[in-house]
Length: 149
Image (cartoon, rainbow, N blue to C red; front, side, top):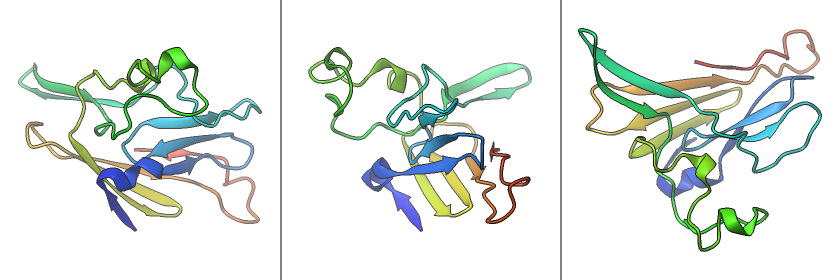
């Protein structure tokens, strides 16, 4: 399935195998739902954790960004979050919405693989992330190695 625009808002692709905990890869590239160390944590974003990219030519940095797409509305808060980090105060800081990021994303999910294409005509290159969930039924040894590359 291919998702674009606001349709990516509800995506949390699980990265994590048996006994490894789980981190969700959101449809816009954020790392969400950090459920590790035997601790449930839906909506948790683990501080300022993120992937980033920079483009260089001959040792000069042309551009650098966090690997996120735009944050879609509503911008004023989320249920379950403390009041001072949302409602009336804008998006929570840990979303890194003020950092340079990509205009949009295209999410293609076919379990156990997910592919995110980051879109922005101003970035000097094409950016794509592939994530892998290693869950293999009845194979606990190989089911514990999450990856994103």
